[in-house]
Image (cartoon, rainbow, N blue to C red):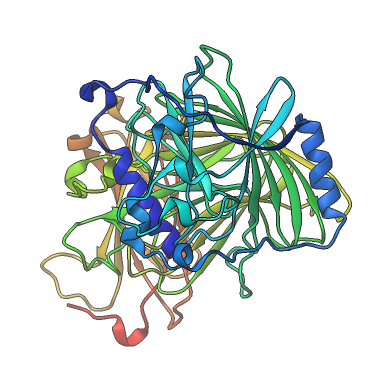
Length: 531
């Protein structure tokens, strides 16, 4: 996972280049015809489902990952120097608003995927051609590479910017996309299996992609994918529409080979090293380093919940039980450059990712896995939906949802929302601290808060699964046109198990804010220093 993130962070830098319009760029006028492989075959989503069902009925066969030594031995700089030639892009010869370009195998991407173009109900496999690539400083020679090497994945360009990516599919079942700020950040996956368990996680692969030729003038591209792994096979359909918020409308059909204990639907994968709430690994000159700063949930009962992310000392797993969730996602709410001071990968521009079910998902839980990390190159945050009803071998399990990539999620509560969580040593300033406690300052803005008078009787409603809550307050915060809640938590035992905290602001018996949910891990008794 770390190596993959290194590579995709480089894609993020590429996506942050100057706009094509400012460079005076447009679609290339010349093209080179792509070579077909084999004969075209009839194709539609039903046929792909049938293929996935047939796969699931047979023993799993792993794809080969044996590459020529010259390709397998590429180092980081050599692999990065290779570029796909724009004149070989799929649909370069078409009046289409999309172009597809392919990734070369090598470095961390050793399993070939099959690429098809779909047109007029026929799927034509596309052959790897060494002439597709400029090999730069890689040391590879086009004439020395096998003609059947294959591809690692693909990336998409949209006509509004032929330079920067709109989306990319690369590695296992990972993919990512951009919104209006053209900045890569977190990733999505086709499926997560046994994430955060004691045994190794299983990473299903997209083994074939079918790219449907878009109609002239269409702003939507349809991509199909065949998924396979030891536990499950599946067929996916993506309707991809770039924009200020990029929308992916997804339908999936899953065919388990066995019962999966922890099935992750619509998994979002991100990174959180440190932020204003968690300084455990704040050893960098930048004051915050994260792709996203919280998990937002719109529960089936209508409640809005904000769970700030942390970088815990040990793996932390949470399951938020729900029925018929309306949406969830990993969100980058803090979009202030001054809070990051990163002018290389621009964490303030990282897209949020919102998951919207297209039907009633029934009973289950939104699950969050937070993995310790000491480096920003690790993806250490995963969130997904886990259904209570486990798909059984031999069954078809259908699921549909939409993904929204952009600065802000498309759905938002009418209540005030949390904009900052800060923590530090508790106690009263200027007075001796008789015992260890930990301070929480939680800021809210929006909703009715700006219309309340300074003397409004606003109550901070706080609960803790363990320990004593004290020194509570709620007061206006003019700097953000909102309110700040503050309290201390005093651990009352020696346990270092996480303490769950819950907070919202209330006025005249009615909630003013979304629910703030937090997990605080007390230090060992020997480390509970009182200054």
